[in-house]
Image 1 (cartoon, protein in one colour):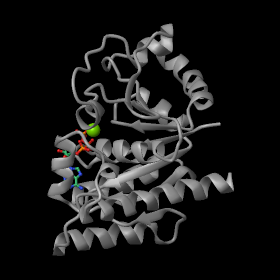
Image 2 (cartoon, helix red, strand yellow; image 1 turned 135 degrees about the horizontal axis):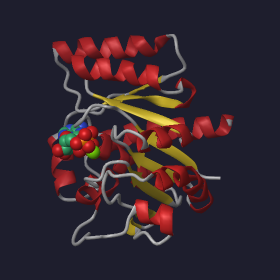
Image 3 (cartoon, helix red, strand yellow; image 1 turned 180 degrees about the vertical axis):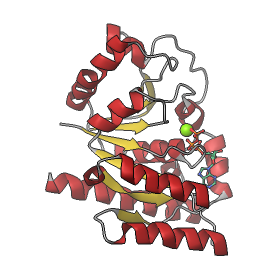
Length: 238
Ligand SMILES: Nc1ncnc2c1ncn2[C@@H]1O[C@H](COP(=O)(O)OP(=O)(O)OP(=O)(O)O)[C@@H](O)[C@H]1O
Ligand SMILES: [Mg+2]
């Protein structure tokens, strides 16, 4: 049975899509079949991973209700089923859990690049095996992380990963706050991902961190390996 991993934070721009795409591509390189789903009809996954035309008419909604959505192959073993729009019929919402279950028979991992769109996001969260919470070390995002901790089943949380981290007085203060919020829990505090111009450029060129061998790439790869190790650890328990 495959596992669903949802990248969840209610804040925009913290790196949800960046983290979802790098994690998914990392897992696919371990010879695992991986599908990316999203509750964000902007489908930014395309801009980070696929060169060329990605027009589509039939996506997740059509796949769930009629069985003929268009899957895009992003890399070897890595697929994406985009989302048409944010209008969800009761029929779609009702059928989504059974579809997710079916995906678990076909894929080793389903990575969900989520966005707080009511209804659909809750279905993903209810059916997910693991939740990874990305964040940014500032006041509003720290509040939002604490919010998510209260909103979801903490047993499912793989960890919190701060992104776009720069060692400044304020960021260090919020890093400590987030870290201490995890201290008496089983929630892992993952090594923060630094803010790097390498990452901006890499995403602009629709590459993944696994397609480089420079020092910056290696540093970020190590952090994603830490996240993958957390997944493996959870899988060995359950
Ligand atoms: N570690 C990083 N270093 C530098 N730039 C980064 C880093 N992580 C993300 N970015 C940049 O930050 C921007 C936002 O990232 P991303 O699109 O992944 O966020 P998001 O949470 O998915 O946003 P949205 O809420 O709009 O879906 C992008 O332009 C991306 O290139
Ligand atoms: Mg996004």
